[in-house]
Amino acid sequence: MHSLLTRRLIWRLLAVIALAAGAVAAAPARAATDTAYISATGHYVRGAFRDFWDKNGGLANFGYPLTEEYVDPQTGRIYQYFERARFERASATAATVELGLLGRDAAGDRVFATAQPVASTKQRRYFAETKHVVQYGFKETWESRGGLKIFGYPLSDELDEQLADGQTHTVQYFERARFEYWPDRPAGQRVLLALLGRQFAPKDLTPPLAPGAPPAGPITVKPAAPSAPGLVRPLLPPSTNARVLPQAGLPGSTFTLAAQGFQAGEKVGVWVNAPDGAIYGASFQATADTAGSISGAAIGFPTDAKTPLGVWSFVAQGVDSKRVAVGYFLVIGDAIGRLPPAKPPVPANTDARAEPGAGPAGTIFFFDASGFKPGEEVAPTIVASDGTKVTVGYTVKADDKGAIGYAGLYYVTEPTSPLGLWRFEAKGKDSGKLSVAYFVLTP
Image (cartoon, one colour):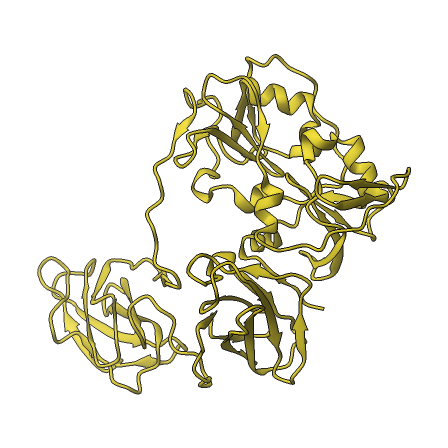
């Protein structure tokens, strides 16, 4: 059974190297004032954060550092991400270390069913604070690896979710962690701590640093500029000794080439390669000037409505020198930077959106919807092309504008999923409002 999850969980699907609980011992304790370079990820750990890491489970509980210490531009607090956690201090001079609520972030705004009170035993424990039960291997891991201080209270009971291996596993959300049960692992290593730090760490802070040159202190991070939703930024390969103008255009545009590096006065053959590898225009030639360059309107490629969309290339080769120049350009079929319309055509959406609009089986589709009462619970459903409905055991709450786009719902298709027209439905429990978005699974 598939699962609808929040978009923020998708990064966990990429992090498939989770270590078994208890499988790696913590490093020996060191002085809190020392600075250590961790070559595995290329980041430094120092001071209060290093001392906390050493004394509270180290590598097994937190994993390697993924960023340096930095000042969060929104909270003003000092953060440092590790593979399974986020360390926090109130300021650069504060000695008290807290752990970020990554489990809450991963759970998003899902509403989990609560449990009836039960008597606590050796095998299970009821938490009246959040009305959830922790039991068996999850209870043993919670109690033996740090308890409330490290993991926080449970936010859910055990539930089933699809994980990185494509299989459904038993998981449980806590305030600062998510526990996962992997039954095929050796005994004693079946409870894993999810790599939530990898999921939420700012990507621009994760590139490794050089050894022997730690930053002088916490890094200052500028607030990120807002980006338009749904934009796709096609990356053209780097041109070699050439430039094409314009670099991108709609069908009907004419693309011209300027190239260099040839012998002065030699003939230069020019042709164009289509996205599928077909060769166009191999019959015309240009003559290199005294600087060994070619350019001008004569070296142009006109397009029309039948021109295939995608990345094209001009290729120029000197007849005598055999020197080659290559310039790339993009023919697009919609507004610059956006995906072309889904094919085959799909019905018009109703106050909802699926992204992308089409893709082969195995694609991950993302959704948002609007038109609900502010604050009402909204139930999401997927309807496959064969009519099969995929429902979930939770709802999300509409924001103050009656939308659920903030939750970033997504659906993971499988290679065996039926092809054709699918739809995402979101229904308000109070208003009865139904918002629908369509998407297509292609061969």
